Amino acid sequence: MRAYFTLILSCFFFFSYAQPPSKDAKNKNGSTSNNFNQMGVSMVYNSIDKAIIAKEEGVIVTKLALNNRVDPYIRDVAKHFPDLEEVTFLGYEKEANFSFLSELILLKKITFTFCHFETLPKEILILEDLEHLKLNKCLEMTSLPEKIGQLEGLKRLDIYGAKIQDLPESFGSLGNLIELSLPFNKIESLPESFKLLTSLRRMDLSGNQLSSLSDSLFNLTNLTMLNLSNNQFREIPHVVFKFSNLHDLLIMKNQLQSLPESIDQLHNLRELDLTWNQIQTIPNSITKLKKMENLKLGFNQIKTLPAEIGEMPKMYLLVIKGNPDINIPALIENSKIRIRT
Image (spheres, helix red, strand yellow):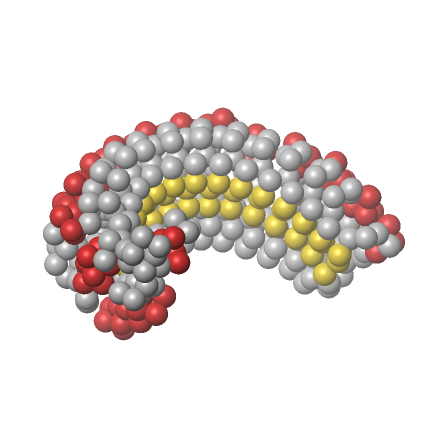
């Protein structure tokens, strides 16, 4: 199975990333270039050999995607490409030596895809200026090291489809995080130190095993997007109503049975997605959300709706499909709202 995924991703890298510029492509100064570089947009090179060819033609290589099947020996990468800002690793084993990364003083983003290690390589933990760390389908990863808190420069952290159960307390040291995405892991609770992540604007915790959020998170007031879908919530956590700057709240596929009157505290809300729950009634207070544009209530057990939804000034889309016994008030039916049933 591992070989199959690596082969598929190898084909993806081959066809997706740009080829090095042709020797016949000359700019006005007579040097080799291409449309991407003339526009100031760096290409991504999908092998060391192709990147070396581009470098010999005068291209400054800033983005490199490495496949373990093509480039198993990577320790000389920094020597060849000192200007790297982004590097992607596909299919590397835990024995791989990533020590060269510390020599790349301009490095801002690292992506690991289908890599085979149980925790974050120690060589990553000293990169204090790293801004974006992304791990995609590293299926054997079960934990993050306590020293992840040393990555104080991180602004974005994405870990999709691993098997992480617990997050270290040092998470609170990642105070510059703006976006945190941890979907489809096995997280059951968040460490107390999460309350220190006050710069967060977007947080995706979907596809985990969460059933509650601590009230200590009340000061995450910069959040504009929160995704709690595919978890085990029976009610919207009380602390969520403290996130007054939320624009998007997604809580699909949980076990919600009701929507509280306090929903009107989220006065900046533009999208609310409650699809695939067990909700029976919608409170009148939801009509106080004057900035609401998209309200998605599909596949619940709703029978009635507040008629005043039809008078909400910004409302554009109302999804109520999958509520077979629902009664739609005339004030809504006759409004300009787009209704999906």
